[in-house]
Structure formats: C-alpha cells, structure tokens
Image 1 (cartoon, one colour):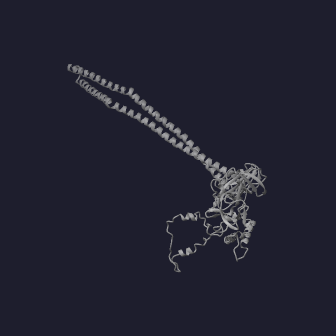
Image 2 (tube, one colour; image 1 turned 45 degrees about the vertical axis):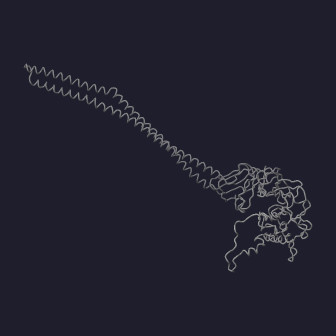
Image 3 (cartoon, rainbow, N blue to C red; image 1 turned 180 degrees about the vertical axis):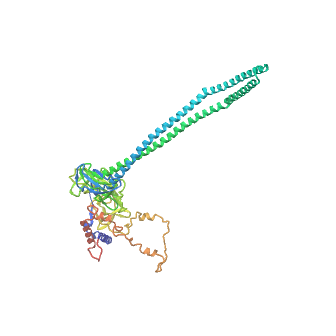
Length: 576
C-alpha cells in the first residue's frame, strides 16, 4: 500500500512539474519565509536505562539450561534466589573429579615416600663409597710410610742372614776339612758341612734375588695398585654421588609432577564445585529484576526464559539503580557530527507524554553501530546516551523514550522546511513565487534539523517558497550526479564510446540510434518531480511531521490528500 501511495505521489509530482505559473498552485503549497529563533535539534527515539546497574551473569563454564528464573519486574531482596541452572552435569563432574583428586593425592603421597627411601639408600651408598676411599687413602699412606720399608728391611735381613749363615757354614766346613785331614772327623761330616755351605750359598742367592725383585717390581707394583685403588675409590665416590643425585632428581621430579597433578586436580575440583555452586544465583543486592535485551542481526529481544540454554558470562538479570537514568538512542550519520557530549537535551517518556525532563548528552560512539547494519548495510547510526538530570518519578527501565538534543539556537534566522530546498544547476535553490511565476532562487544553506533548514542568503522575509519544487528535466539531476554541465564541458573523455553491436534477429546493427532516440527520456527507475526513484528516507523526511521515523494514520492521510489535490481535476489536464 505504501509503495502504491509513493508511486501516485511521485507521478503527481511529475505532472505537477508541467505547470509553471503560481496561480496553478493552491495557497497551502507555499511557505511564507519569516525570521525568528531557529532551534537546531536532533530528535531520536530510544530506551530508558539505568546509569548504574548490577549485571548478574552466568558463571558456569560452558553452557547450562535455565530451570528456574525469577519473573521480570519482581522486586527482590539481597540473598533471594534469582536463577537456578541445571546442575546434573556439574554434579557428575564434581563426583568424577573427587575420585581423580583422591588418586592424585595417593600418588603424591607415594612419590614423597619413595623420595625419602631413595634419599636413605643414596646416603648409605655415598657413605660406603666415602669409606672405601678413606680406606684406600689409608692403605696407600700405610704402604708409603711404613709397609714398603718394613718389607725391604725384612728382605735385606734375609740377605744378611744368608750371608752370615754362608760365612758360618764355610768356616765350619773349613774346620771340618782340617779335622778330617787330621783324622779327627769323618769324611761324612765334611760332606755334610760342604752341603750346608752349598745350601747357604743358594739361600744367599735367593735372598739377594728376592730383595732385588721386591725392590724393582713387587713394591712398585703394590704402590701402583694402591694408587689405582685410591683413584678408583675416588671415582666410585663421585660416581655414586652423581648417580644418587640423578635418582634423587628423578624422584623429586616425580614428586613435583605428582604435586602439580594434585594441584591441578584440586583446582579442577574447586572449579567444578564452584560451577556446581554457581548453578544457583542469588541476588547480590536489593532491586528490580530486569531481563537483558540481546541484540543480534536477526532480532533485538530478551532470550532469557526457563528452558533456555545460556553460555558462560552471558547476562541473565540486571538489577538497575533507578536513582540515575539515561536514554540510549542511535543518531543517524547525517547528524552525528552535530552532536557533542555536554549538549543539553529534552527527554519525554511514552508512559508520561505530558512531562518533559532535562538531560545532557553523556556519550557519543566513535564508530557506527555494527548491529544496525545487518538489515541495511547502508544504514549507519551511532550509539548515543543522554543522561537525565531532572528527578524522575517511580518508573521502570526499559520504557520507550524520545530525546531531543539541542544543537544550537540561532537568533533572528531565516529557515524554511527542508523539503523546500532542492538542487538546481548543482546548487541548492528554492522555488519562489515572484510576479505570478515560480522562479528558482539559489540559496546558501546553514544548519538544519529534521524538519527545517537555515537559509543564510538568497531569501528575504516574506518570500513565498514552494514546498513541492517542480520538475525541470533540464536542470534536475535525477541520478545524483555531482558534475554540472559547465564542468562536464571542460572535461575530456579519452575512452572511445561503444558505437555498434552485433545485429539482432530483426536486422539492425547499430543501437546508437535507439539510444539517441531515448536520450530525452528519464532514466529507467527515475521518479518524477524531485525524486530519483523510490527513496523511503526522503518520503519520511517529507511527510513524517512528528519525526518518529514512522508514518502514522494522520500522515498517511496527508499523503492521500496530496494525491487528491494533484489529481482532482481529472484526466483532461495536469494539476499541481
């Protein structure tokens, strides 16, 4: 229905453009220019919110299902149950983790006991190796300081004894030989003494050789052996100490591993117990329960209800502080450069339409709202907050509100309805009634609001401007071009135009003629009088008198009246 009305209005403007005299327009088609205070303001609708509020979130890890939630709008006391989440999975996790924690605790205890046992074993091994080294040192010292000299002395004594025995036996043999010669001894005695001499001589040779072997080989060998034993005992002690350290380090690492495992298990158990406890959420303070509104690309509504699944850190309930309230609105990019923090504002609430509350702009976003661009990528709005400074009655957050931000107040200014200004030869202009005719007058525009625009020069007080500018095919830019005819004449196109196409089924080959024949036609989809096709924003700007962004029944009736006014003369002529 709206599209049909827009089409009829645009067609009416097309036929209206063919009238050129002022008498063909009714009096209500003109606006008399006058001076006065021009208040530049931006009006946007939004939602009443609390400045300070306590947000209750889901602290359970992962996702959980709501099995109970206090109804929205309920006044709760501190400690009251707000939300209960399904705790079956959390309880299972606690039970399993308690078993894992008990196993980890046992493993840690065993690791500590094994470490103490290994420390005792390694201490004994180190003591034994140290004692062995001490004995080796003592054996070497004993040999070097006494044993080798005792052995040499004993060997030397045996040589001396052998020499003495040989001398005695030789002397005895000599006397025996003399006695045998004298006839006092028998030859057998002499032979026996001679044999004793031989034995003594052999004993001397053996003792001498033994002394030489002892001095040259046995004592040296024994000394080297004792040195080797000392080195081996020292190396063995170092080896035992290193092995002990290695085994102790392994057991200590095992203890540390089991300790970390136990700590992780304890932390996991505490986290699971905390998750289980967080399945029941209690009010941190007194307040009014408000469900949060979730904004996404598809909808903007609250998804909090019994049976709903919520994620970790998701907002569940808000407990607003209603002592300070604000209105959250979204400013179109057309006006965002005019809005600044600290600007005054006037707020009206839908439940209290007859009351006005003072406010001040407290926040303007630096970047466009991403959520608002899902439905319309070309729509760019900026989140803005207006802090209400006047005291408010007992009213709940979430109600619809409207904020009018006062940009500036220009004294003694000329302003006209914003739809009266139209492009003409690349410049803004107004169609003014002069001498019974409608003439375009270039103007210099200034600030603008949602309904009026400031005229700095070009119009005078008392001028009558046409609210619906006529259509002029020679000057109206239907495609939104920014290059004027004068500018286009000074530019050179170095790209040759396409001049021909393949012949169609009916013969012809060059379509340039057909293009030239359509040159004076308006572009396809171009709308009549003052519009380049269907522009819903232009339609709202023109007929949305209260600035609420919607067409009410009264405003729709105004569209129908405009259509009847333009087409009331029948088909025989064209009416404005």
